[in-house]
Length: 249
Image (cartoon, rainbow, N blue to C red):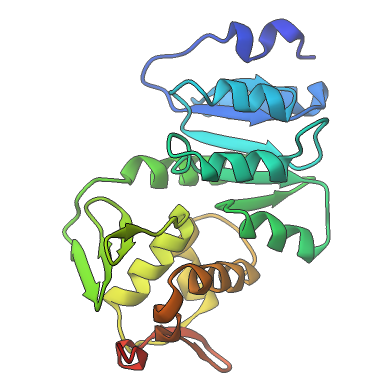
């Protein structure tokens, strides 16, 4: 069982290893999760409350937040909101972990900016696979690739070297999943993709998630890109495609 001495206040950092902030108020559950993650070569810091997590996030060094929803004090939704509203932490991947089973709960979490959502109970391999995929996406942020690095439509710019989206020079606060979705659709204009085809490009290969996640990310993305939302077209019976001709500006 984890004790207070295992919490973030007395953490030990392993140099070079990705560091996960595990926010879970049940010590027994946190202990099992931590064991699985550390066996996979990851460093885990534990916070037993939302307030403790936010205090730790005031310092650098976190590659991923595994965030329980039901917490004493500030709950997981509140923590996620604060992570996304802070310039120093908004790019950190967040995976919500919860026993809540309603689809509406998942939609709320993703709507607040979570990158992924895991329902309890889950297997150790699933937890590790999702955590590593999220860390990999986060660490790739800012690296240039062989793909198109700058996409422009009117005043909308997607800079793949910086993993940034701007409209009229103003930063659009996209989550990593929303950014990846927008970029993939824009570099494949006019092509329709099923939700299952889009999932690997949004959440990574080898990660099991329901395709409903794509609908939530599309809805949030449309809200954030304003007049360019018309370019993300729903293809009935299939999925989505990007059509720049729909933008009249």
